[in-house]
Image (cartoon, rainbow, N blue to C red; front, side, top):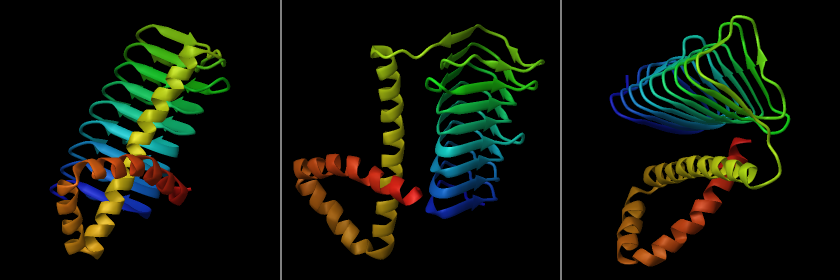
Length: 232
């Protein structure tokens, strides 16, 4: 059991036990099986959520799966190629990707930005408690039994300002997430390898604030690129 937060990075991350706080994880493969008392912010090649998350879930991955056992207490924000949502999200869902299949329940609003050829499918067991909007040129695939309690709105992407704004918003959100993981990983490595050096660096940053801000802005762009390369 972990009573506080869990911050971890590696080739493969599997969490079987409960975590009382938040989870920050970056790896090629991430599998969460133990209940989480806070938020999760994870980035990887494949992410499988097979447990309960008390608060928000933010996921960036090529393949994202929420199993039938998965429950998100607040909202889900996800970036990827494919999303398979078989569990329950109590709040809203915002997904930016290429394809999504909903087999479980979204009790709030659901928004899917899928691109021109993106496909959204609601399986027969799917439930959307409020409004559903999807950005794609492809018609919604709605199996018999699927339920949307609110309005259903299809927004066809067209070259122009609105499409650019949606893309830019998703890119900025994804970049912030990956940047956060990159900084955490660098900080953890530095603290574990050379803790005294890390303390000296922190003290110098206080003395040279504006120079540190400049380096921070540069690393904001460089670190995520390195993290993405490592995760591929």
